[in-house]
Amino acid sequence: MNWRIETKKTAVLLIDLQDKLLSVIENRDRVVQKAVQIVKLAKLFSLPLYITEQVPEKLGTTCKEILEVSGEVPRLSKNTFSASPLLPADIPKNILVCGIETHICVRQTVYDLRMRDKTPYVLGDAVSSRNQIDHQLGIEEMRQDRVLISSVEAIAWEMIEKAEGAFFKEFLSILK
Image 1 (cartoon, rainbow, N blue to C red):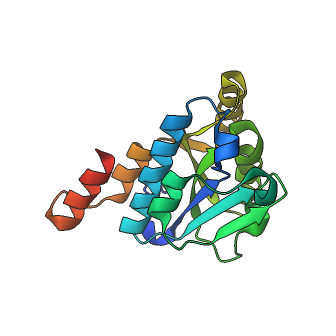
Image 2: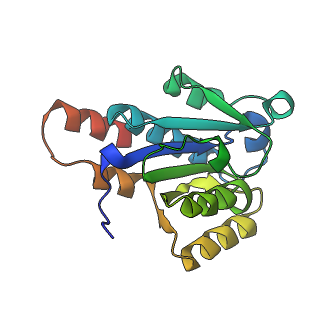
Image 3: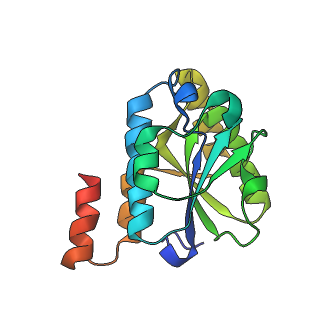
């Protein structure tokens, strides 16, 4: 397995980062801040970006912090826990996954992506649950099943090739 993240084979998936859901999530501010970072990185690296919303007619839309940086990316409405069925057949091999809740929608999506022969990378600092124990157990279970768990910053450094030029300066400004 190639552990390097090739940007031309990578997409970003944000799962259900809606205000109504986020209001009860452990570490809400960190999750949103890291999701904003990964959206900015997706734009910098020209990665496909997918945003899902769980039953938005009842739970509202994606939080404003993400909407402000994501631009005109369509939001995919779902009433299932897994986001995988909403994603196109030709989605890139590597999927950087963040969102809520770790032990429900994130976990089910990750396992369904693996069944599609995709390689999901769970951004551990950009996922959470209502209860810390559910989050921890969700991460632990996925890790035991050999799902790749990393952080936004670690993944970002895997994607950058050179430490020079205007592109690198913009990259650094996102991580600060």
